[in-house]
Amino acid sequence: MKRIFLCLYFLLTLAAGLQAENLVEATYNLRNAYRSDSLKGNDWGQHYPYIAGVVQFYGFDIFGTQESFCDQLQDLKRTLPEYDYIGARGDDGKKAGDTQEKVNTAGNFPQEVFSDKYTAYTPSDHFPVI
Image (cartoon, rainbow, N blue to C red):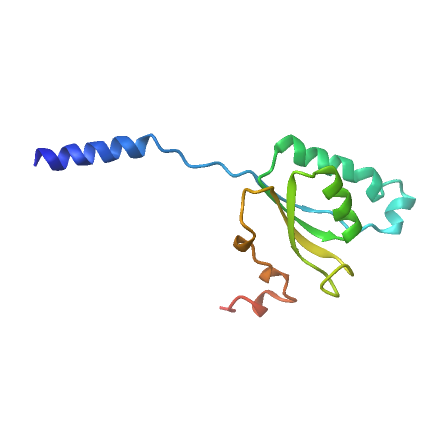
């Protein structure tokens, strides 16, 4: 009986010393680079440095983007070289149209853990309707 209690005590003491790993994550709608935004003085070239600054300040382990075009992602890749980009391409599966990207700190997550099934036209394309 003493052995059981000692084993339990040892296991509980060991478990108490373990801590969960924190994961800092975010998502951001980059907003397509519309001509009307440039006319108002709020074009991509002016606001992407702020986005990159927020990412660097918070040190996100992973973040997602929506409504981003390839040239916008290239700007972020150039500014944030420590991140890997994994994503679902737009209209032609390559560079045309907007993309949905998942971005993670280089080497933190294997590419296999990501899925882009959420890029369906409707949620019911991939998730059962109840």
